[in-house]
Length: 170
Image (cartoon, rainbow, N blue to C red; front, side):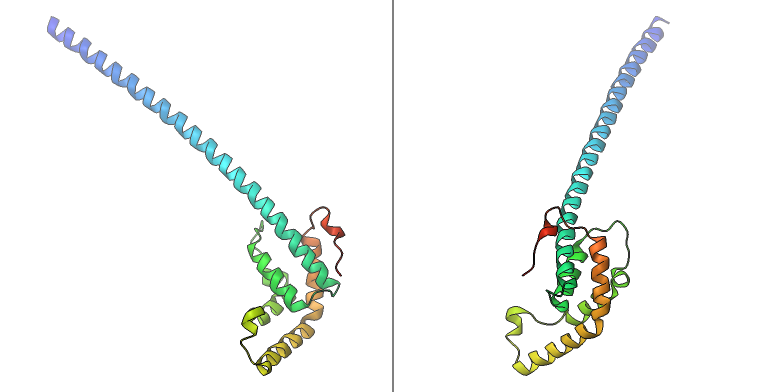
């Protein structure tokens, strides 16, 4: 009988020790999960701040190009190409279809996106370059009113950074 009581006591001590050890492991796991959640929240905040800063720079550039186009100091084809590329990098809060939101700029972008620029343009004959320019000029002319309306929308949607609204185009 004494052996049975001794075995039960030893078993109870072993079970209590294992339960204590399991409790410590659960506490450490809980602390580790809290630490991971805290670090993830910190990383998400840092990412959100980075995205805001990136969006601010993009919005400033988009605004300046749209303003130059609106004041007819930048060709529509060049401005539309630049604006569309910048807007494709912008992180919008909602997933609006930009082609429907800015149809004039999208239409012009669709015409000029495959046209060669800079050094790539030099590879073509003057006749081919003139054909491309003619297509571009006609597209600018036919989309001018829609592009101008889109520029006005962009000037409202994308605010310039403080100080850049004083930039003068020559």
